[in-house]
Amino acid sequence: MLRLALLTYFATAHAYLWPSPMLDELESLLYEITPGTSGMANFIQPCDTFSFASGGGSGPTGRSNAADWIRTAYHDMATHNIADGTGGLDASIRFAEEQARAENVGDGFANTLDVLAGFATRYVSIADTLALGTVMAVEFCGGPQIPFRGGRVDATEPNLPGVPEPEQTLDSHIATFAKQGFTQDEMIGLVACGHTFGGVQHAPFPDIVPELNDPNSTESVAHFDSTNTHFDNNIAIEYISGTTQNPLVVGFNDTTNSDRRIFGSDGNVTMLSFANSPELFASRCSELFARMLDTVPSGVQLSDVITPLPVKPSNLQFILDGDVLQFSGGVRFWNLTDNPNRVALLLWDDHLGGVHNFTLLSLLESSTSYPQGVATGYRFGDNSSGSGFLLDAAAGITNMRFMVDGKLEDQGGVGFAVQDAVVFTTTSCFFGNNFTAQFNVAVRKGVNVTSVYIETQASDSLGHITITETDFFSPDSTVAVNSAYSIWTVNLAESPFTRYVGAEIDGVKSSMALGLFSQLPALPSCPS
Image 1 (cartoon, rainbow, N blue to C red):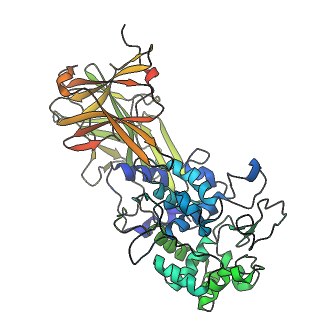
Image 2 (cartoon, rainbow, N blue to C red):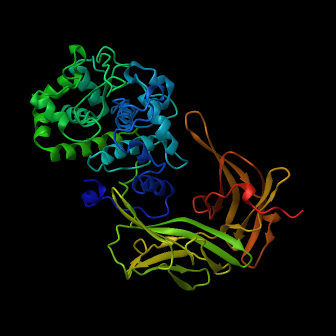
């Protein structure tokens, strides 16, 4: 029903090559989902979850995060003007000016951003999290797979208005959707698809929904259909059968019965086809939701459809300790067939022309079933702690491959490139008296390392992430630690911000492979 059954449908979407910082993070958000964790999916499981009940109440509100997420994505996209390429899904709805408009009444947008914007990073935009939220809301709550692309760019200012409102005429709605890039029948479909979730709340729409005084809907939400937290074609079945309670079809205020005007605008042909075929409805919604999410300002280039990598290394880290490199990390395999006698090997090349292998069978192995498939993970190391294994520092490592059940996994011959040009070192230490540290990295000799720096990540009130760089001491100040590496140093103070080590190697800046370093007090004390 979800991704696992439909991945072959998107055969034209080729898996990207690892590493790719943005795509790696989006792929993890999309596919590495463990129920009960702090991940995005936890906010929509079960599907009637609502995190912002008035007064902190825990009773049934009639609202759901899933419905708010879908509505937010549409309202953000609805500013698009196909004629001039402005607007679209770019997180402009986070600006107070947009949320203050009559077309964006209610607290659902702020609530949605409170959750989803928290998953934005230096590589993943807020706009991408809004798109991801819609994909997850639909798929985790019974809907079809929606092909997902990444690379949306967050707006730096509000967009012009563009969201249709219930009291407007049918001609106005047709024109508004046309401006967004949708035909009349696509308008019918997109409204029906979106309205399989949620309803209309009294507080922002008192002229549409009266106070319900319903203990099962404490925030007085009149729902679009009888299964308002689950994707199905009941929105169409109930409309065609005349049993619908949709407040935008049979509401007491005929002026705001916009769904009735939209659904009936083609003589009910589209809605009848949806009512007669749940498969058609699901397929059409997958297409239209994807179109909605991919409607972005001109000049924004989205990625190919992101599918799970069959093999994905993760959390790779080197620590230089004298003449040896401690190499730790892991690898995730996707949808392996069951094999109790599996043999998995890590193979790697070194700087001296050597080829090595390491059997992963002795490592901690775990398999996790996600809605989209099964992930099987291994850690690098000689024991269950995953502390890694030791490499000769001079030889190091340049490229990895994996052999699983006799099949070579090397990304089509490219392999998995690994950089050991700039690595952590055990020589860093903490000055406890003034909460600063001497933080060292080891830089491989003979490699074109232009600069090494600490990256400090912060965000403003709108979620825009900024990166500031603090350089390590220049190469003139380096100290040789062995025949392969020299030490570069920087003094750091404690900071509440996220910090990474970055480097420019052969003219290319990189930080993902270096990872986040530990809190400074965890370092050993500096010699007095």
